[in-house]
Image (cartoon, rainbow, N blue to C red; front, side):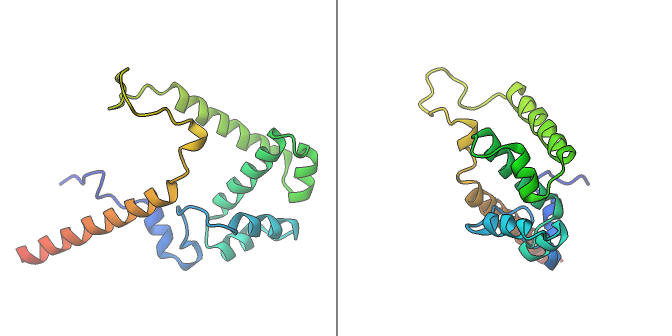
Amino acid sequence: MQQSRYNKRSNFDELRKNEMTSRAGFGWEDGEEERLLTMRVEKKTYEDIAAELKRTIRSIQTRLYQHVCKKVESQESTEEEMLLKYDVSQEDLCEFKKKRDEHQTKMLNRKRNSRYSRSDSSRPYIPYESRNVNYDIRNELNVLRQEVRELRQELRELRDS
C-alpha cells in the first residue's frame, strides 16, 4: 500500500528526534540570528553554533550567508568586510549565491495554476519577500496537523484490532 504524501514523515521529523537538532525546520525566534552572528564573530565553529541553537550545520551556514548577502545588497557593508567579520570563504558565499539565484529563477519561472488565478480575484498580490511573515505559524500548524493525522491513524488501528 502506497502512503499518501501527507502521511510521509519528513526529514525534519527525524532531525527533531535528535536533541542536537530538535529545532530543525522551525522558524528562527527573536535573538537566535543575533546569537549566531555573535558566536561567529567570536570564531565559534559551525558545529558549535548548531549544537547550541539545536539546528543543523547547513541551516546555520545558510542563515549566515543570507545575512551577509542582505548587508552587502543593502550596501550597509562591503562583501570583503562581511567575509572577514564572519570568517566566511569567498567560494562558499559564491556557491550559496549561485544556488539562491537558481532557486529564485526556478520559482519565478514556475507556472502554477492557482485557485486565485482569475483576473477578478479580490486576493491581493503579496510580494515574494513578504510571503514568509507568517511562516512560523504555518509551520507549527502543519506539524500539529500531521500529529493529529498520526493520532487518528493510531486510533483507527486500535479500533480495528
